[in-house]
Length: 103
Image (cartoon, rainbow, N blue to C red; front, side, top):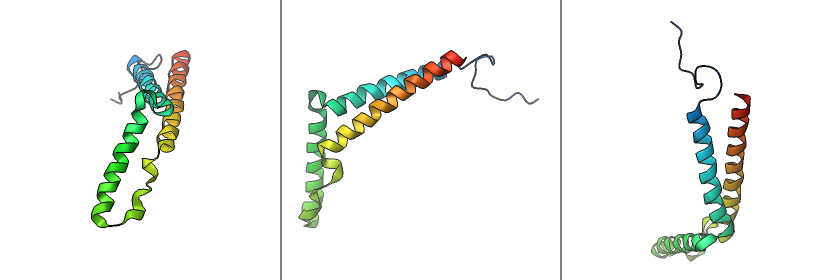
């Protein structure tokens, strides 16, 4: 009567679905983070330009030109975010490996 939903396949280790989700999430985070951190193909500069243009549109309608120095519109912010995403992706892959070895 107390048959609950478990996250393991027949109780003998982690589910392959969970391991796959960790691995796919880790690979996507590493790929996206490396693109942002190393600015491959100018992704970061295009995003910064877009954010600055959007910020300029908002501040020009308000006539407050001092607010254009947005933290999110700096290349260093996206590069730092990319480095953090890369580390998070590596952590996800390490967790998936640890779950696989423990299972």
